[in-house]
Length: 132
Image (cartoon, rainbow, N blue to C red; front, side, top):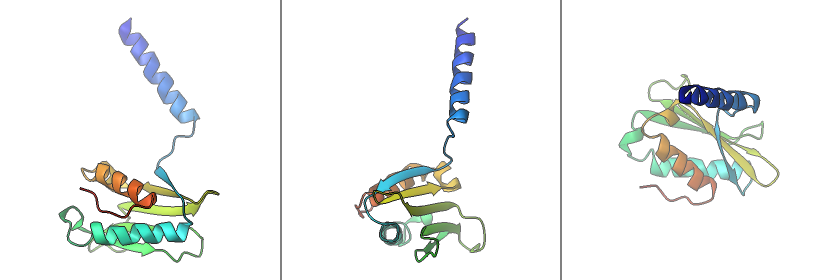
């Protein structure tokens, strides 16, 4: 009986997630316009991740700040594969109150995922310090 109710609860949760249009990305709010927030995040990435941090030594970053679409983004790619699939995408777009910062990609599922989420959340909020 207990197993059936657990299965029913799991099925209901899955159905609710499907019908609610579950997001395939994380998002954070930022109080500044997209270009400014993307520039701030790119600068913090350069300083905190790509200035000698071993966790990001196998990657390069490609800021696309001056986007004609009005949606600047930063791509994290494997070193030696500049035309390959991004391992992390961080984009910013206007949302009426400032910007919505969206991030997605396989790097979020690695051991660095929690740090990436924490850093992007902090940088989106305006704090550009490096995490621990």
